[in-house]
Image (cartoon, rainbow, N blue to C red; front, side, top):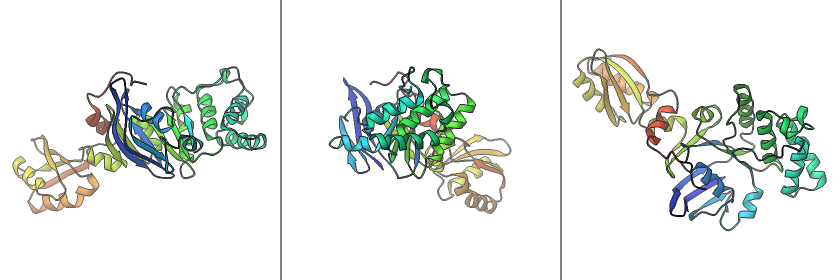
Length: 314
């Protein structure tokens, strides 16, 4: 559904996106991660045709944002950060206004309003003023507007920022329910957000794509691997593990007993049988073998430490 091909964007000599290439398949929910100022919002603005790329291209459903931007926009719904809503309008009026901008006919507008109001759980507030709604309901109104005309692609920029825990859960469940029927690209710097709703993730730092893939792949490629505790001579432990197929590096964490090491280049599941066999064959005793991380936090930190801290240009 989405293809970014060596996409770059600069502002007055400042590079916001630098040669970014990745794909998003149909029906996937993919998280676009990065520190503040990393280039996430710029990437979304190019993808949604708010601005052209400086070089490279992006395609939505096979259509170029450079030469077919009008058709691209017909195929996507966009929820920008800080949902732009009119506080003096009722929720239903806001959605009618959005339907008019979409060019929907009157009969189609009625059908679409009924559909998105039900889908986003807005029935109880559809006639309430936007300015009196909770932040969670305002996010729902913005998402409902993005869903008008049932676009195959949804692009969501920080869709849960500022929500309380209950509102957060509600919006996450709503986004998860869209998988399969819609492709969702979700930009966030919240790691739990990606773990909660996304099937894959891409990490951008200082305008460059530094990692992309499923969580297990990111754990492996991020160098976190597995952590093992083995009883025996530290030098023998290290040489034994370095000979295990797939292990890229053995890092000694603690040379006491048991010896604690980090195995880089493999996940815990990949290493379990091979490490167990190698340790037993060397006359050592395996006390523990666990994943090097149980979340994306360490991967994110290892890939983006020292990244951009200023607000991104544009």
